[in-house]
Image (tube, rainbow, N blue to C red; front, side, top):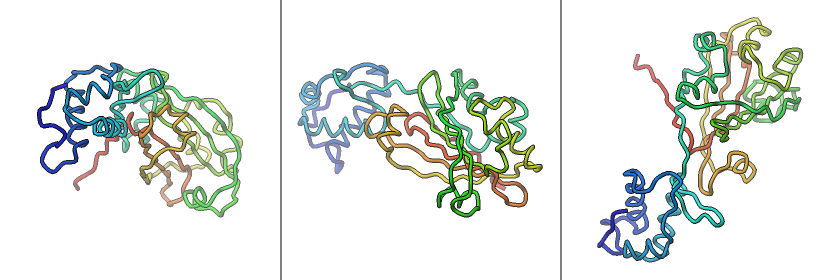
Length: 262
């Protein structure tokens, strides 16, 4: 990392730890420290940058919240190895793409980027509709739903949690209700039993910190946020057929949206 002679005052009106975090971030981007490499102790960094240990600690905490560095018992602070995957958010569930690949779109996207994706089915079960799932599927609370809960991995590292909700009466006699991968794709099965194709999707995105259980499942470092995306699939009559509730590790994804200018 490039040393600074500006002391603990930082740059201009920036807080001291923000200026120092910027220097650390630039050093990582330059490759001064490689993924997985351990950073020097706080005391050494404080001496090198003529800063207080409190300032160094706050700067490193900022980098942790951005997913650039991590820490662990006996590991000190190290540059994280996470490799984000680019997700073509508006393209992945289009009918033409599903027909072309005949495979889970998550796995296909991973393969396009030289990675190996797979999905573990955690649970397939019946649940009563909550206020939230009832709103998504336009049914009364308490309606009998079927949920498929999955965890999506890339190169054996967890990247996403995904829960898909359906009307149980519609899918209970199909492969969707079986706790195994659906070879032809869940959406293809859904369209067949419904008798109409999916016409469009509506996405809701929100951002928050994970619960302790979510952080454990996704192996998140402290301070890393999650992105919640809820995609509801509709037929041409505006009837919702599926609600897909995803939780994405914030430091492992780049969401790409193509927006028409017409």
